[in-house]
Length: 624
Image 1 (cartoon, rainbow, N blue to C red):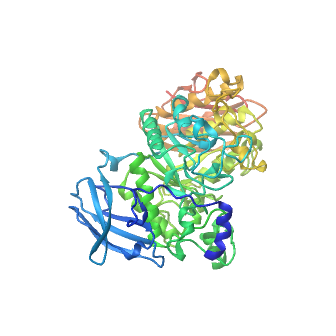
Image 2 (cartoon, rainbow, N blue to C red):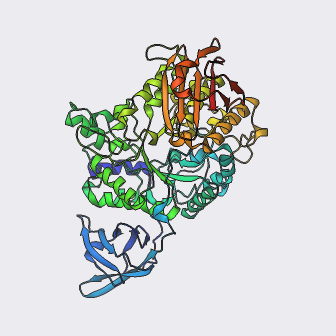
């Protein structure tokens, strides 16, 4: 839509509340924002873009006299209230506070003090989340309320209303910090929170995917300093922090929507135009340009203006924003929302530049398509017919999700029942890096797995055993360990319920064994046992995977390396125990005579002959 048309949406979004100026402004200093607010010396890429916003700022000429720093260029747009200053920061530049002097003609009009900081030691060598990790996904508004004083805040429109399924409930960063020991005890090693940046929409802002300030934590969650503290406290417990990044769209309440840097900053139409959500048009060789364009340029929702990643000024801004948060908060990973809706080539540059700064880092993209060949297209180094390389290290295994939510309910057929996960893994040849796939049974956008299974614990144990022992990086959705349910058809709020015990006055506290039911403790203890074991066994992280075609409802696969071999047996039959002839697996069992089931603790003898496994049961056997 045209800029005039956007004003209707902005009126719905509420009035613009600008962030406090970063320096005291005199009448002679028109600057309202300079972003990023600081930078670091010693970065791999010496270039830095400064977005400067203020009344008629384009009329001023910036100058810098700081050892090692030069102005490469100053870019202005059709909007005189912006200028983009590109700096070159030499490798020997020292940290300090530099003066950016703004002149009109030959006269100094005002100056801005800009901090250049020293990096933390070994910042560039940070390790991102990987296949040794287990990721816990939570929605901060629904996890725990550690600071009721910030449930509502004067700087943002929507106030707390816990009675509303789609309202703000008050969960916050302090609540997460308060329960890091709980996550550590469960066996979690990486934490992915849905976005924590400010979302100033008047309703349904709890999901925080309509960001109104990319450099500010939503005050109902806490402060930037709180987020940094969360990262530090998590790190003390061996937990990496993954930030949820939204590059496809901002929120319509974002401050720049009142005064866009340029008309092509967002995709505009004569009237509101929604995406067709047809991600497949990107890879479809026969797709019309109209369909492809609508997928990429259409708005995700009325409150989510679609950003134009083909604008190089915007792309530099988004890339630097991600790097700023990594450096500032000591992050261990990024998750990129709605990845295939972005323009492809600029996002390749996004990934390349982030990974250039942090070679051992990891970024996972939300790639919600249903065939492995479609998902693989978006992973770095995929052999795509069009030559496209996303430079995206990790993708999300939605095809496996499809298999996991169905197979326990079906009898084995040619490609149904227990065959579904087998078939899914048999197609891993399309992935350049199959071990760098995020694998999961549910998330904040899907039916909860306990709803899918109607609370059947044996079925869940099969699914979770598979997730814990196959290739990839397991992701657990908050509350799964206590059997939380939720129906997608009731709305997103139902699959994002409050964690019981996270709020003062909750009648039940499921963060403690005493507050959980016997069934909940059975599930929690089962998951903890597997996760603790997984953490200590590199064979599951990086070892080889060999599987055998399922027979008679039983799926058998092995994880192996030079030091260890593990045999996983899943019996999906809901009727009888199965006695399987293990001679079929001789190529993997050769040299082994016995084993021990990690789950039950049972010793197993004569494993080269036969093995009996009860109905709807999983076994994880360490071979001896």
